[in-house]
Structure formats: structure tokens, C-alpha cells
Length: 231
Image 1: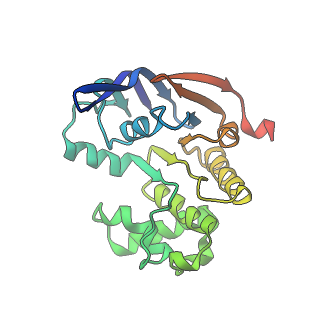
Image 2: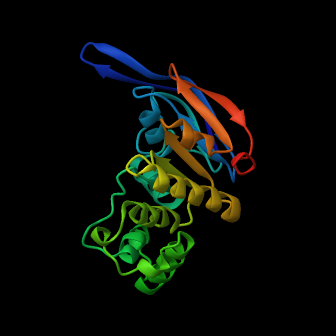
């Protein structure tokens, strides 16, 4: 499904060139639930932006669903991003004037779908995350955990190949964060959703069947095993 091969990424900072990723490799298969863990400044955000087609590598190969995307135009990459990748962020990024249903339906608006179909699909996505009774609520009428559930529904509504979550529990208290991780595990287990979670939190990483760690610009596999067997 997703394969990064020999990825290098560097930035020019004044007269110096700073290497962030150095020969990084990653393969994610359909149905994986994988964490990418690393300290601040380790390159997690850079890697997330490359996986999410928000940035390009300086060199290396990125194959997504059998297509080499590294050398595509910005417009083509944007189209693939909208169709194939669902994003979940630490800060939710819900639009305050829109209801939960309208927030979830936004990615489909950009695809030019009819309003009736957008509403139907958004309702199904909200039901999957336990928010079917909150479709008409705006973000300020929802708790942090409920807002994150809406954000997850928004990531799911377009039926993406991959859900990419950046510190999805970072703005939540521990109990609510655990609920969100249980939701991710359930979506992965029951729906077969492929999920990549970027985190600095060992407890979040431990909930994933695959754990990787980024260090020194490279990625290593840490451990395999079912998180459901460990809990």
C-alpha cells in the first residue's frame, strides 16, 4: 500500500544544509495499525508531511497504492491526498460555525458531491465514531474528546486508503485519550482501516500492533504483536 525507500530530506538554513531524514525506509500494508514514535526534533513532522503528500523528499522513492508519487505535480498530489489520505490532528481543526455533520462532510464538498450524498456519508461516518446523536452540534458544544471523534469521522468520510493521525491524544486528558485510542483500535480491527499514528507518547505507541521509532533520521521497527492481546 505504502512504501518509502531511501528517503532523504534536508533543509537549507542560512549557509548550512541540515539533514532531517537520512535513508529512511517504511512499508505499511493494508490493515496495519502502526505508530511512529520519536522525540521532539527527530523528524516525525517532516516524515508525516511526506507521507501525507504535504511535502516532498529531497531524494528517494514514495509509492502509494502502486503509484510513484514523488515526482508528481502539486495538483496531482493534492488530488491523491484528498482521495487517499484522511488526516487527524492534535488540535482537531474543526470549523467553529459548522455543525458536526457539516465539518465531517467538508472533504466531500471538495470532491464536488451532491449535498444529499455528502449528508448521508457524513452521517454514517459520525455513527462509526459514536457521534450519531451530535450531528447538529457545533464544536463549542462538544467536549475535547467529542471534537476529536468528529475529526476522526471527517478523516474517514472519504474512505481513504490511510488515516494519518498526528499526536491525536495530545490535547486530551489521559482517560479521554485512552477512549480515542480504543476507537482507533476498533476501527482498525472491525473496519480494516489502515492507520498511522505519529506520537511521542509511549503509551499511545503501545496500543499499536506495529511500533516504529525515528532516530537519527532513520526508522527502525521496534516490536510486533496485537495490542488487543496485551490489554
